[in-house]
Image 1 (spheres, rainbow, N blue to C red):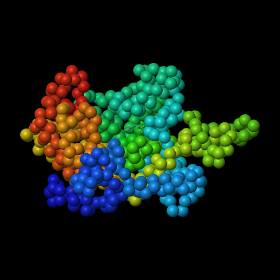
Image 2: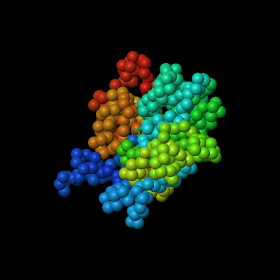
Image 3: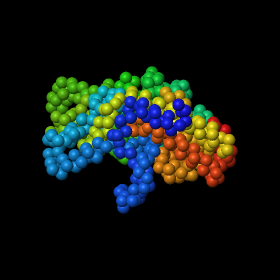
Image 4: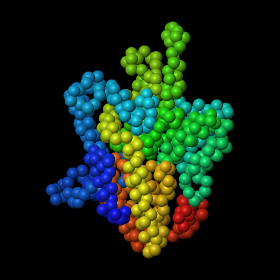
Length: 494
Ligand SMILES: Cc1ncc(COP(=O)(O)O)c(C=O)c1O
């Protein structure tokens, strides 16, 4: 069958062993997206109730159907049991008593990131967790004080690292090593190149922080090789997994990662701003007791330094109000506050969907979906080339082992607004990174091959329209407008 037909896409969907998982999600209709209200104002106000083409799980994952059900149970428990909700089982609820909601999700969250349950905590938010991890893992000395991170790191990571460096009285200009792309032609950072930067600063670097998947380019880093290499140089390694968790299989424990942080609102589908995750390797979470060595003959506790709060203290001592911090062994000992039960309820609902499959199965489908997207986009680029010139290029690595679900598409300068407007009109949701990139992420839990097919069709139309309306400038004009300083990777496709 012709790969470039909608029939082919439908056939792939019929053969997809994970197709039933889409039913666990609320897919907004095109009319839902177009309306300015939550519900139709009149019976005939429904418009086109065809499902939208939502390829934006890299930004905000769609709502699992279980979320509403579990949220209602949480609200009903609060309404009918009040404070008892903390301690008492409710027989007709899927949720654990609130005192245990965080523990209740650990086994399933650990599977998503390849960790032991005790190495994972569901707490705070990504940036807050990064601060907590830096407070514990970044202990600069005179000899080792530098932090290596990407020059184009997500700004929050940059700010967090910068603030810790200043907090220790150091100068970011000296202590922050920013990995910039080797040339203006490609934003991709090869493992070989990262190793060379590590080599250059090895003797005085304390910590390396990188993203599992780069938010802008969609590049998947070789976490095992990079972690191993940095460890041989005595460098602590942390990963920002915002775009990797729930997207690609991870083996944080086996890879011997020191710490990692992630959010749950992208590929983990827990809702905007929902609670984050943190990984602390088993070897860093130990709490040792030395008999009789502490004040008053109590056991002396030895554990990694950290910023502490009562929720990190062991459950037996948490309510004793003794002011003696006795951390729970593992990542749980890094918690600060009692977690938001509304957030954790959303995590429970989402992980109950992940439980229906495995990260390995999701990855298998994801590779196929993204390859299909790549094939269709390559054809569009080719078809557009004659009448319109080169309209876009894919800046994400072409090797499926070096990317997750997302492809980042670099548009010819001046096209972005027009393309995004056309896609919105067609009920297609992707996101943009200015000045010229759109990120397209088919998500294996709920996206179909047909979604990908329809996206590609609308995208090609949108590009044609943008060129016809004269939005696009020529590449050379754009480079001149940057004074020749910033290439943006455009030269790659010239
Ligand atoms: C790569 C990356 N790091 C950090 C963040 C910040 O996350 P938060 O706002 O949850 O702290 C984001 C948010 O999208 C992100 O994509």
